[in-house]
Length: 319
Ligand code: NAP
Image 1: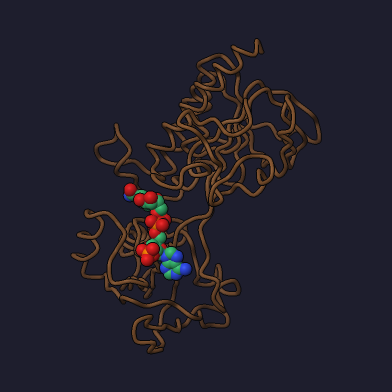
Image 2 (image 1 turned 90 degrees about the vertical axis):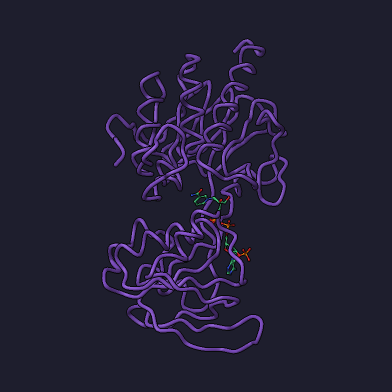
């Protein structure tokens, strides 16, 4: 897992950074690497998820440079070490409010307050919830949003996976290591996931599909016992016994704290092709600003671009 040694958790103090990066996923840590190599001594506030969503992925097969694939958490660890090698300071702290009305920008965190000459926002995205009865009550008792984290608990059990995208298929395939069967429940009869994952899922004997169907309720008291289903074409309702429900139905960008201060579009921070937000000196990268690609490699690229632009901005400002 991640190397947390050397992280400062100093309390209630105001500190200044030339470049402050919010988020320690591929975008934030790539931004930190570039800003560190520009000798700007960036500070990275990790938020609650070091490594971002990628760190929750068992194996990443499409990040260049790793022909055999690389563990998600291992890749996050490597990103962090590389940024730290050049002087980035990675702090286990979460921002909860920002003031972007003037420079230096202000960022209020769990541990205190920062001022920053430039900001790189890379706060990522959080998994969407189904919003059906039973989901909240049974989270951690059979309902999960992370196969890599919770798959082991479903050894020799039956699970269902909700969604038809890359995450649903990738995580569903990972769950076949533990579960006796993985039933993918998708609201349409066509998958959104890429071709390789579709082929692997369809060829895997442990994987079944229920098409054109949504979950209307997750049932259980101490643990999940079944899901209530509805066929969206016929309206027919049914029950399906299961021990686990893994939900992969997309993500919502973690941008609430920037609302009203930055231009947004559909919940994402609006950036131009140089990662500039609507406030000079504030840049955004990764899934906070990307409604389209959402890949580790594209997020890392956006982070690097944001840091290059922040460096230029600080040079121009004479900071
Ligand atoms: P996604 O591509 O947005 O897919 C979400 C899936 O959930 C879709 O199939 C969608 O159905 C379904 N869905 C959405 N809301 C729903 C609801 N309320 N009830 C039931 N089903 C619902 O999300 P993702 O799979 O998390 O992927 C996000 C991004 O990360 C994508 O760009 C993906 O390519 C990328 N990613 C890549 C990899 C990889 O390259 N190996 C792995 C994971 C993720 P519809 O299809 O009907 O819209």
